[in-house]
Length: 262
Image 1 (cartoon, rainbow, N blue to C red):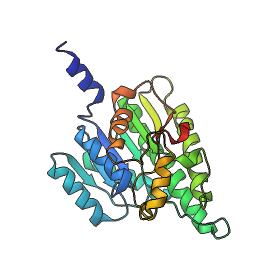
Image 2: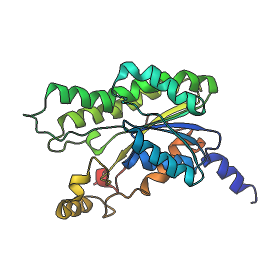
Image 3: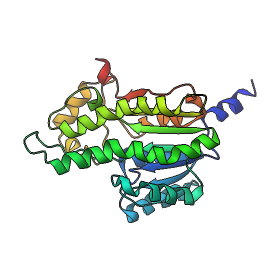
Image 4: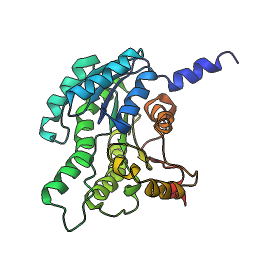
């Protein structure tokens, strides 16, 4: 019995691992980055604003974790090779990638511009693939890697004013399968999965949480009866980033309180 805690620790601890988290300055990305650091990974935080990133990294370091920052806009796919090299210069080549950067313009179909459409798909759908592709060779060399994408309820159902976002997140769900097919074969040690959150309070949903009647209505549409809290992300983050999930790939886990089960 004394060996069980050590065995479980080996399954879920991330000591010696290096994680790159995009969209890490706030919301889901920041929660996941902090969680990975608490589990023992050295974490590279990325978003566009360097000052906000540095504050987040400082909080992780103050709590005893290892964190560095690389500011950048991952929607600029032509810059991703240089961006990946900067991330690797912090602690070494990342073997965990969390693609949490995203945007939801919430515009009616009549008002969506070509620019809005292209930017939404570039950030939400193109960046996860092209950034992962930059990191996969080092993961293959190590024989281990974890790619975690962020899908959505809109990966499987439509919401008002959500055409570009829904298209991008539907694509993320299929892209996750395609990434797994491409990179998990032949015992590569790489897995690729996605988390599809329900309604959590983030920068993308802040306006909804300012409307109590809307938030209460959304909570009633879950089975559990409430909307998501930051702590709800922690377990699935560690699970998908650790050896505990080595036989799971190409899957999307709906972290939604049962919303999609009803």
